[in-house]
Image (cartoon, rainbow, N blue to C red; front, side, top):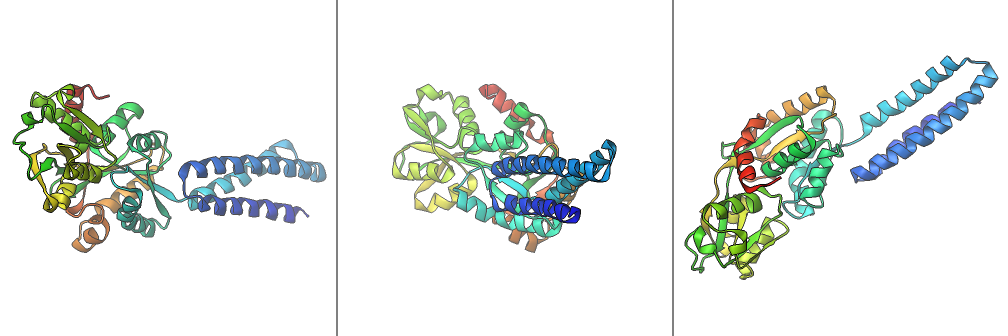
Length: 335
């Protein structure tokens, strides 16, 4: 009878793990895990109380049995819980998942542990997920990284993207080919298309460029924050906006449809990967080593170029790499 009870409780633990894996949202998985753990604790205490009366076991022995059972459950759940690779929604969710799935698969195979891609609802949601340790590995834009560290503290760094052999990237202030705009100063009394307020290349940097060229936001005829770089480009092409700001990849994708660059942005340290603050240090080092090993052309093409077509590898990263961006953010009063 005791064996049956123990077996039933163990099966309940295993079943709970399978159910956790069924849910594809980290927050739901976390809440469900906590509920299952509470249920198992109650069941375990009741069962061990019964055992103590039947076999006259003393309290320390009962506590030891309970601790062993719960520890076994915790180890099993940790071993089987997928790692969450979180990404900000710089494109539509389906496209982001498609681009990052090869990297998730690469890590899954090497770590022998499932890795799932999670796309934030918006940039703010992505920052909160990182700050609250909901996601395990995070891909972050430079501005989001700086803001997140200011709000939640430093996170362990893994690597930053390298494109065309450089660990920096640029964007463009774009307008239509037929536009009369010649310089940034000409944007006074024109409508401007920004991306997400927390986007480096489609919001933060263009705001600084406008300011440097003597154009305050209230001197524009109007402006709007669009959902994603593609929508900024489309707003300019359609004439809804006179100009806008996008990262270089998006500019080149739409250039042949009638866009030109009014001015290139300054170079900023590339996007980077970080981990949650409480991830096991050995696992962090293993992930970092795997990412930095992506240097051979075939691996870069298969794993990294879906993320960015000009990617040439992942390189080491330091918090100091983003100091120039911090200075820009401070000038703008960006918290």
